[in-house]
Image (cartoon, rainbow, N blue to C red):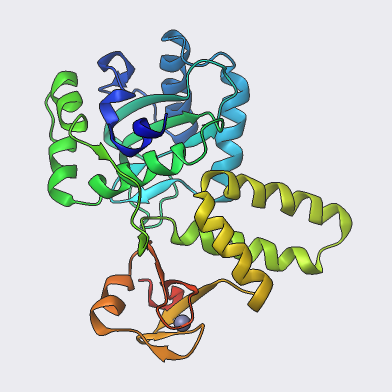
Length: 272
Ligand SMILES: [Zn+2]
């Protein structure tokens, strides 16, 4: 199993039969349902209704629209056999997905993941985000003329564990976890239960090492994620290297501050 994680391709989890080249769906829920129907038909998932509910719950927490016209809706599945169930849909007209950049989504990759293999989901997510962030690659995805061409382009996606010094496209999710954990401290019993459930949803899909580090920082400082504002890490008030600072700005990646060790994310004030 370990070797599967270390060296695999997106195509290990994807067959052309799991691709809908022209989604009929007009909105987010319809699109998710259309893709779930594919997974049911391919016998990759059993309980469509349950997974739909989980996906909607997850979307409420934070949209899985990555920006740049791509979304990765996902949910935990409990099936014994398959560890991962993927369906891909392309929409020419685009579907509104509440993405960070408010752009309509033209590519939806729906992922059902089984938590029995820790790290698998994050591995997959990071690999997808890494390829799909390149506009040249996205243009080839969006410009593909038919299903087999789309399958060919997507098959180029190689999956590798995210590098230690940068965690791709998870900044807003980690920030959300911190907001929830801070809110939890002041919450009353009933609300605390709900917040714990939300936090667990996020924890499940983040890499174990990242969550461990996050917990240690939270325990020690009361916060773990710091914004970078004007080139300065707000966790320690020390300047970040210029190149690094401009890489962080406007990105949804997580970096680690060399000085204070906290996670650094782009300042929300800077978002335009
Ligand atoms: Zn710092």
